[in-house]
Length: 267
Image (cartoon, rainbow, N blue to C red):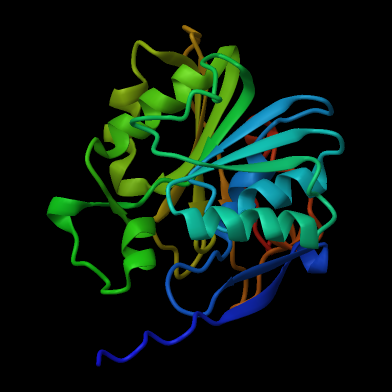
């Protein structure tokens, strides 16, 4: 007789200084700061509709819903178990009426997701192409980190199809794939803002290249692209800068166009 698989275990983790409690698998993909920064960058206003593509356990969706009152967030998730967990997390945080998890594949989306019906779309796509990545072994972690058929192009095309004309599309990705991302946006969206996330002060000692970027565009726009200063995550030691701490723990928004690069030293 085959041995039964061990039961899935979970941890309850605090986000936004405890304003959001996220139950997530102990093994597999676990949300960290990327979805928090992504949610902070979405310029949503009360009573608007937001789509979170690949919502996972709901980290970005719930951080956004916690920050902006009266928005409605729909999370599309391929994994049925993760979609159920995201809905449970919404209820756990008192946001069950403002968040709905929908099970589906972005390449064959469920009919209930009508095109051009969202004021904002956000996404934290898998960071690695299947042809350039080694599988981490755990199925959930692999699905979160390695792109399936269609790759990044499919994520961008789906997001822009769901967005209203002029709606924002915001995603976080690896800096090394920025050129590819901009190529997919070309001709479909404009008014693009590229916002680097610096590990350390880029003008100080110990400077390192940005590994992540947040990119925001407007569906159907022809506006010019802009590269802005970005955000320094860590100051002296391993602590967050005041600017990063305000977002990650205090729930401050991250207005991409109005945020000058800053550090603990005031650069």
